[in-house]
Image (tube, rainbow, N blue to C red; front, side, top):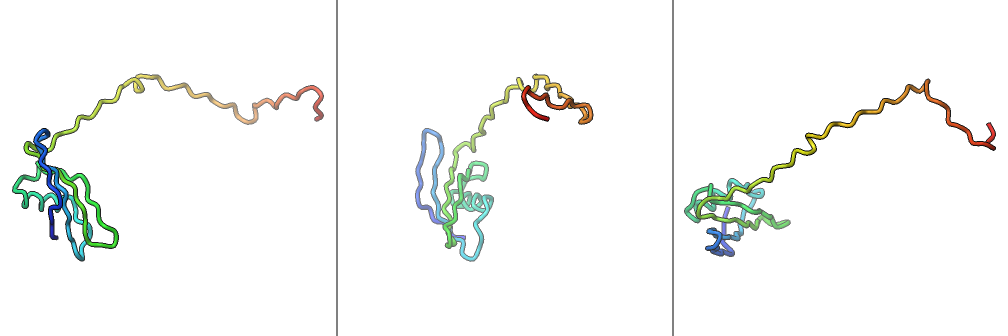
Length: 116
């Protein structure tokens, strides 16, 4: 697996480096995220917990993949997950309406003027 850096941008405000890579993986399937992360850590001399892979796209009919990754100075930030409101859990379930057995059902009422 051969890796070439096509673009590298330093983002000092967010304390990270945005990297675009082109990976040549002849006679092999699309590389796994773990393998790409390992290659990036070796090339940029960092640790795996500071590398975030955004995507890996393989060119159709070609053994080349385009990779977008971020290398953080302080580690990959953890995204906050919003908690769901528990209003739905507090609602009482609706009571089920029981249907009458078929034998007890009334026949439909006939309107005046209709023939039997």
